[in-house]
Amino acid sequence: MEEEASASRWHPLNSLTRYWRIDARRLPQPLEELVRRFSRLPAVEIAYAELVVSDPVVNAGDDPFNAQQGYQNAAPM
Image 1 (cartoon, rainbow, N blue to C red):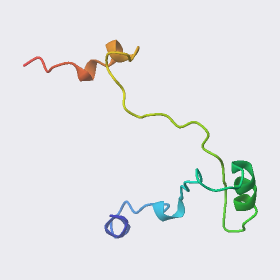
Image 2 (cartoon, rainbow, N blue to C red; image 1 turned 135 degrees about the vertical axis):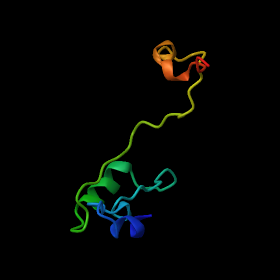
Image 3 (cartoon, rainbow, N blue to C red; image 1 turned 120 degrees about the vertical axis):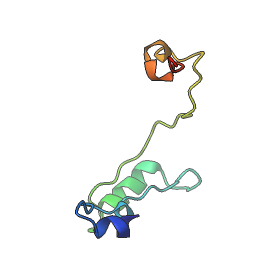
Image 4 (cartoon, rainbow, N blue to C red; image 1 turned 30 degrees about the horizontal axis):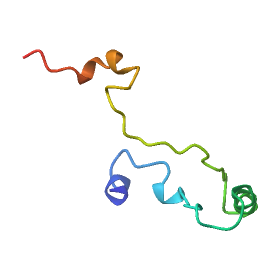
């Protein structure tokens, strides 16, 4: 998709291949140490720990904002 977009008038300013997400859950090093080590690398612009992990599935029955999501209602016709 990036190759196709690069040939168009609206070529991407940045490539998604520049962004990395690393699963460090099973590594013995503390997360803060890994962030410090990555941050010292010259090729890394920013490194940070994603601390909050949540289940992305939302149940309409327990979502307090569901009533405000009009687009989820049935179509009028």
